[in-house]
Length: 515
Image 1 (cartoon, rainbow, N blue to C red):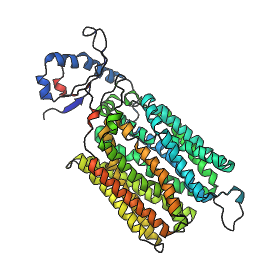
Image 2 (image 1 turned 135 degrees about the vertical axis):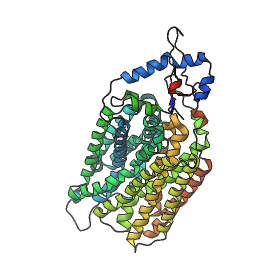
Image 3 (image 1 turned 135 degrees about the horizontal axis):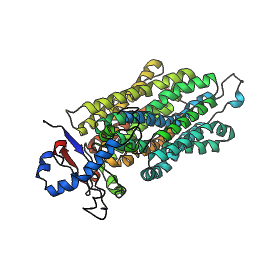
Image 4 (image 1 turned 180 degrees about the vertical axis):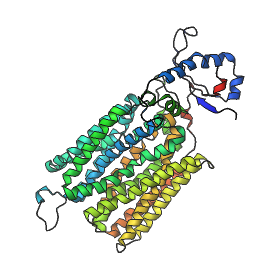
């Protein structure tokens, strides 16, 4: 084409006084090709593109902003959100490593007064109560995010998580009940993580970079243990188990103070976002106003593709919770590694998965020779099928070849990173402006598996032997394969019908065609 085709979205909130004396109650947008625009009656084009268009562009060009990051402010904000998400998940994982450090050492009386041991049942409840807290808070968090935005809600959740983590050493010394209360608060804080990812991707991402942004943000699940395990091991060796909680809690508090000051719910209102980046982010977005606030919950919940995304999440997080919550236990109790070696070794599988997620996110966005639906199926099948194969091989292993056991555990985690091009990416694509609900409820599947996995491990591995863990690996592989079948059957590659609203139409024109 001699001219570039651009997509413009115009929100007609009010007409000039000469056209209307009262503001309309609904937002209207129009979309058509440039050839269709030529066939449009002049009366419509005059109404849609004369004064409102000129005023809109002039306002953006004249708007003052701080040109510190150029047109890359969204990447800086994304990095900050990633660190905040990571810190909340790290606060939860830190307890699973601290348990190893606080356990009484045989033949060593020094420090025995600050040593604590938990039964299998107590350990299961300490982990599961996090999921129960997240489960209780899940729907309220989605609702308040929709009402007040992520900046306020996520900041408050981060502060609660930080305070609960710092107070955990006191709770451990005070009694089991206080541990459960603070762990439940950590779980409630975690309930907002995937809701924040959905809201951020629907507002801050350029549509051609959705896969990359989703891949980076959801990788907090892997980045957290990759950081927490070695850091916790070093802190335990250098200081004591309580330093693990203090370091994580204070770091979280600092990150969320920065987040509260820097983040904006709307990129157009961010002082570092200029007109060029603002227009780029707005491309392909559905314009929303306060008059259009109804969320079609019934339509969403009756859509098979949405349930396919959530089914994929169940398969993914069954494996993730097993590996990231219990890999320190498996490496220490079954394979016999020391605490310091456990910390370093346990960090390798999530770090591998983190890298795979980033790579697959980029590849998924660059592949254009196949449909989105086919890409979703392909990446998800590679992730779940490959991970399940590693678990099944690990189930057939003994403890004689510890290195091979660790390689298979790392392989099961690493290849699961391909899911970033599967159900993770499918959520925002099919739900668009309602991504905060569909993607947000992925955390519901995480919490449900976080309840089930601890009790499964507790029941099947009372003595922590390789023979007992064999059944844990087999069950996890079966769940992954079944969830992938459901995902591939019902997923779709285009936005669902309820993302298109009758009051809105989109207009696509050439800039030269504008009056």
